[in-house]
Structure formats: C-alpha cells, structure tokens
Amino acid sequence: MLRDVVSALPRSILVVGGGGREHALVRALLASPAMPRIVCAPGNAGIAQDVTCVPVAADDIASLVVLVQREKIEFVVVGPEVPLSLGLVDALEKIGVPAYGPTADGARLEASKIFTKQLLLKNKIPTAPAGFFREVEPAIAYLRSRGAPIVIKADGLAAGKGVVVALTFAEAEGAVRDMLAGGKFGAASAQILIEDCLVGEETSLLVVVSGRDYVILPTSQDHKRIGDRDTGPNTGGMGTYSPADVVTPALLARIDREIVRPSVDAIAAEGIAFRGTLFIGIMLTAEGPSVLEYNTRFGDPETQVVLPRLTTDVLALLWAAARGELAGFQLAVKPDSALCVVIAAQGYPDNYAKGDPIRFPKILPDGVTVFHAGTAQNSSGQVVTAGGRVLGVTALAPTLRAAADRAYTACDQIECVSKYFRRDIGARQLNRA
Image (cartoon, rainbow, N blue to C red; front, side):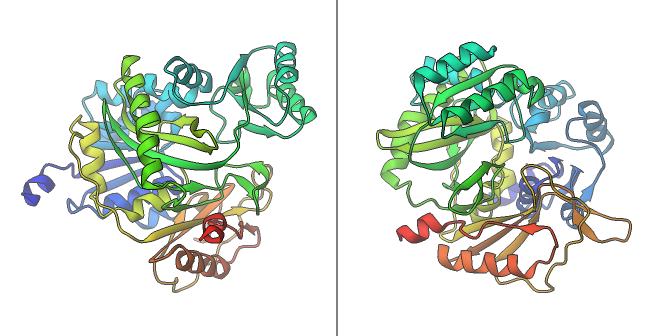
C-alpha cells in the first residue's frame, strides 16, 4: 500500500523562493520516501548545498514557466506571496502542471488586506472593527473617533512591514500620512485599513486547504517585534516555537469551529477554488479568538518549526491538496517541541549591511538545523549576508526549554559581525510553565 502511494507522487519538483521558509520546504520534501529531484528558484547559499538552484527570480513568471518546461517539472511548490499574486499558479495551470498554492484570485486574501477584512466582516468571522481609506483627512478623522492604540495597515503587499501598531494618536497620524501622502509602500499603501487594536496573545495557524477540505498543522507562536520583550518595530518575524501551549485542545476546537471552518467555507462561497496554505493570524483576546490577517502561503518563520515536527510525508500532503484529494488525510506529529531563532543583520528592518561573511561551527548541537534565509555566496566561496533576516536556527527537543537551550547555543557559535537576534524567543511560554 505504501509503495503504491509513493509511486504515485511526483519525482521532479520546483520550489519557488529563496528564504528560510523555502529552505525548510526543500528539507521536508527531500525527506519524502519518493526521493524526488528538487530544483529551487532562485534559492540561496544554504539551499544550494542541498539541491540545484537556478537564478530565476520568484516574480519572473514567464521565466519560471520556461524553467518548469525545460526541467520537466511535475509539481511546483510556491513559497512567497508575490508570485502567487502575480498569477504563477494560473500560468502553470495553462500548461497542465500541478502547483501547491492558490491562483491569483485566492492570493488576493493576502495581496489585499481590505478584501480580506471585508470577507471577514461579511461572514461574521471574529475580527476587529475597521475602516478603509484612500485620503488622509477622512482617515485622520476616523483615528480621532477611535483613539489609540490603533493599527494602520497598508492594503497591499509590503514584505511584512506594512503594519504599524500605533500606541499614540501622533504615531498613528504619522503612519497614515507616511502611507497615503508619502507613499511609503508605493502602490501597496494607496489604500489603507485602520482597525482597532486587539489585546492578548497572538498565535499562528497554518491550514492546508483544498476546496472545502483542510488539515490544521501544529500550532505555533511568532515574535514580530525586533526587540526583546516585544519592543521596537514590527518585522517579518524574529523567531517562533511550536506547539503553542496557550492554544489548548478546547481552544483549538473553538478556533476550528468559529474561524477555520467559516473561513474555508467563505472563501469557497466567493467562487475561489483555494488549494494551498491559509495562514491565519489570530489574537487570543479576553472575548475569544479573533482574526488579525490571512496569508496565502506558509508563514516565515513558522514553517521552520512546524514542518520539522511532522512525521507525515510533506510531499504527499501538499500533492493531495493540490490535486483536490485532501479529504480524510491523517496528519502525524512528533511530540517534540521546536524553537526557531532568527539571526538578522544589524539595522533590520530598516537599513542593514550585506556581504558580511558568516562562519558556522563544525558541529551543531544535537537536534539543530540552520535554515538559510538572506544568504549568498561571494566570489571567494564564502557564505555572506544578503538580506535582513539571514538565518533561522531551529532546534527540536523533548521540551521547549531544551529546544531553546540548543538553539541559543548554536546562535552564539555562529560568527558574523552584523549578527543580531532576540534573546527571549519562547520566553512567554517558558515563564508561564
């Protein structure tokens, strides 16, 4: 039976993207019993140590289609949001190549925060009250009526940086003017969403969706702020851990009942044949769980802790979702805890240096994997920094405390002059325990 399942899986795969999420996907797919041949575009210095990387940009849809045809790729796994919003999956459908990820209409759930908020409100899925604006003065008037703290979001894609949690009216007004008048995020902030600031703990839920069928992956909790104790500006994510014990089995059942199932049904009711990852950012408020956002791809760095905890064949899971065969799929999860610390370049999320050499220890602590994110190889063959978030140091261990100890030991052993990382990933759960 297992042999039959494995033989039905694709043997040549393209992973699109070049960050830590894609490195985690590549590692998970390589572990499949199907032993697929994997190509990554564009990849990074770490991914290139595992599989063949081809220098085709993730947003170059036409060249990616040519690459798929040239390499006789049977299955494409799309990592980042931009190629999804640009219609890569639509283009692959036209040449008959299955892909994991939504078509452009499904990608709107991430590409437009206003579209998502309107869908949530229309379907009475728990979320914060909000207003939508194109002009500065009506937005400022709305701010006055709501007060601070308040959240200002650019409508479009802004690489995880288009959200400002304003603690004062002055900060909120500045964010509104920066986005609408100053064009801080270009076309992405031509429209903005202003919503009430929800208070509580955040959790991230990754849901593999295929039409109206879905599988909820293990819970995790991300750390968005740049500094310890959740201080400073928001980033794409400075670390995460799994499982998030704050999401008890009873609470997860409630989230499934009040948020996941209604979300999947609402998306399908819009006529969207969604096949891919629905990432649901959730605030656990005193009144109950409430949706912060949808993303339409695996989270980064959540993927780096969720996938290593699966004993399920990830290729089989994604293939089933892409082909509409997810009904009845059973997920198997390791009991271990996983914790990921993101090593960033000093100055991220604003200005930071590139090209700094990175030196890795010869032997990593047990259970530690280093996923590359913003790395490249220079002319001397050295691995160097090439982005704001550089590495994701992930540890698996029987307890979260042990995972944290292993991850931070490895972080201290990695040498780079511009190295920066938070020292408190997982601290909230560890202190609660």
